[in-house]
Image (cartoon, rainbow, N blue to C red):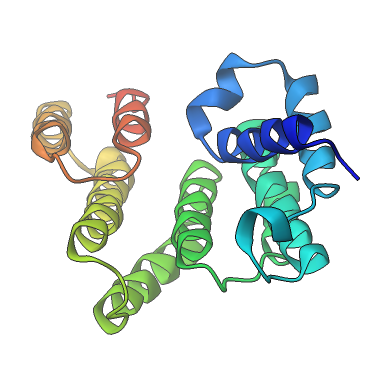
Amino acid sequence: MVPVNKLLSTANAIIFINCPISVGILPVIWFEENIKLSKLVSWPILVGSCPSNWLAENAYNYNLVNYYYHRQKPNKAIQHLVSVQFTNINYNLDSKVLLLKIYFETDEDEALDHLINAFRVYLQRNKLIANKKHKRYYNLFRLTSKLTKVYRGLPYNSKEKNKTLINNLKGQIEKSKAIVSKKWLLEQLESIKV
């Protein structure tokens, strides 16, 4: 049995592993070790009657997806994403965000278009998502769609038009208060060479 103080620190590690900003701050070895430890945690103490093996395995796979994405290993991230069971709405939403980022960053245009359209329908149909959360995710996918259109139009537009489109989109992103991964969107926009 894992001591309670170790159990709590391991549980905190799982929360921090899911936080993208922490991946850049703490050493990679710390994450690798804590992801492995997450499978050993006695989960029923923390979450009631959920089966510990299933919950630990699901958290483990989700954490690996996040970890591999931040280590710029998109194929491994997608490989582990298949193993995540979306019984928790947050796993589902955040996994879609990671998939969106992977598809955008790897220029998987067709897959990205399908994901954006499917996610739009998912948000419209799912009544369990709170309005604020709905708006935050909707804005990410809507603005990523606009970003994709700007990016794809670069070779066909004049330099001035591209600069105008980029500045307009940047203004929309910066004005938006309710948005998931705002920093990521701005980084992607800044990386576009005109």
